[in-house]
Length: 263
Image (cartoon, rainbow, N blue to C red; front, side, top):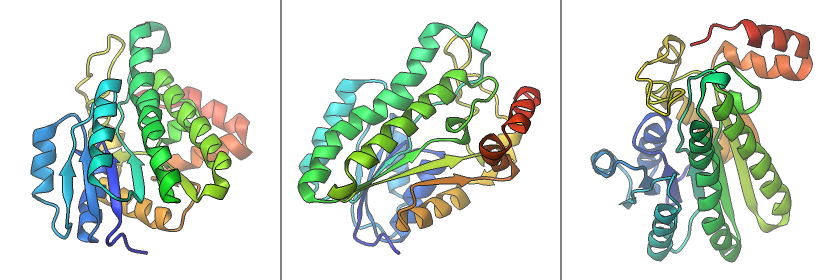
């Protein structure tokens, strides 16, 4: 499958997996809506979108519902169809549960969970009216199992699984598809931009993240899986084994999760 002449909206498009998705989709001739908080970075990315017929830069702050409403209104006024909505925007965490301010838990849920579903509630009626649509959610393997230093982050991603699994079941007969993507260690700046116990960015790039799968490879696997309308996929290296340990050998999972290096 190719995405030629498909209309695609990507949040979190300014870096990492979102940027890689944008460039791959542009090369396939998709019409793109790219969003993040950083308008200047998005404009620079637009200039690299070789092959795309249309690229709309729509700034968006997933922590601010007014911004979400404005972005949705702008997008839906510009397009006649929307084939794919990539919920890729989000933020991670690096802090111990007992040291983390409650405000940090709220912030992670607001951006990662409520931001995504707020936008979904604006897009879903449009999908239903046009008679089709596909939501793609960038979760994480921490959305499948808990992991040290990521309590609120894991919780926000677990919540996305519950919400979008439910949405998929409700709209099975409405031609609405949902793909939940669970990356492991992908080489992006997500750990560099992760927030600590006080809500400030840690500014530290995890060694494991830095040695992870290139974002371009992850994005390529994502697009192939979306084309096949897969329900849930896991992308990464040997860390993906933890998903299967949790499912089939839980005693081993619990032991490994408690002893894993905390970075």
